[in-house]
Length: 243
Image: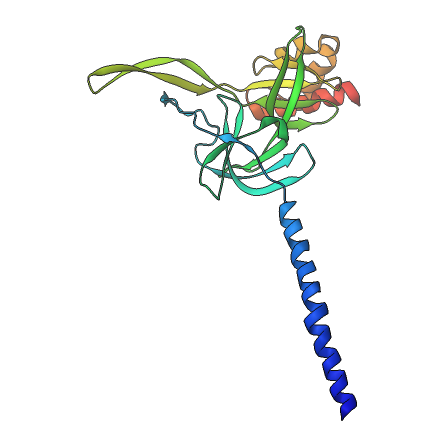
């Protein structure tokens, strides 16, 4: 009987001494894990401008993911892309404040826009503009990736202004409209702007392959009249140049 009582006391001592230590260690481990979760940072976003049209690609907050420059991922947050400023805006779920995300910390972000068949993937890239000494750092919407790539800068531009009256005064309201710029990016990071939806615009970019491209476009019955046509055409260019 005494032996059983001694075993009971030993078990009780183990529970009181060892288990709390294990629970504490587990708590500390979980706490460290939470602290290591990737987080977004930036400044509170207060950009306001009265305008006809929107300076956002997506007027409403959309689900999205962000790949950070550290390689970490932030998932299932709410974002807007401001095409007028070329900035990613995040809705902080804890404070309900919009935050302009630090651009240098973003490698890539994805927006899941309602009604779109595919997510919009934007890459933070710096490109060398062909035939000039200019470089551009933009959030580029990835449209095609191969040996060459096709990206779109989903910019929104100011086209003018309108005068409105209110409370006995006149004030100016900016007129905005989407005007994306498309770039074909070569393996050496040199970028060629596609100035219009036409086959001729591609012949100007690749004059040494004009004959092969013309033949390939004719074989496919491809006319470039839309963004989707341009994506198909760049696929053809990729095949002609590198296959």
